[in-house]
Length: 94
Image 1 (cartoon, rainbow, N blue to C red):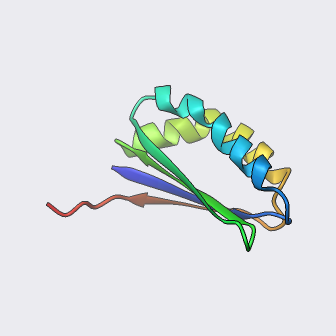
Image 2: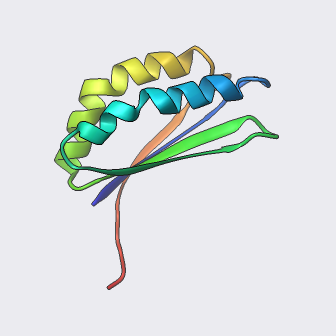
């Protein structure tokens, strides 16, 4: 499995915009290899993030290629510093 961690910081008062971004990710559920998404935030410090889990690296890369530019554009409209995105291979103990 593979994971994508995406973190960003906004100006104060942007919580509803970040929640709309999460809602806009609903089409991910229909994409090949999608397992789950978790959205989280530190509302006092205006820091938000998401963690997406995919079956394969190829599934994750295909999704990023397909919807990544639109999500990046939407995120850029509310961030106050460059977002952090990193991809990881997931290890689950037996």
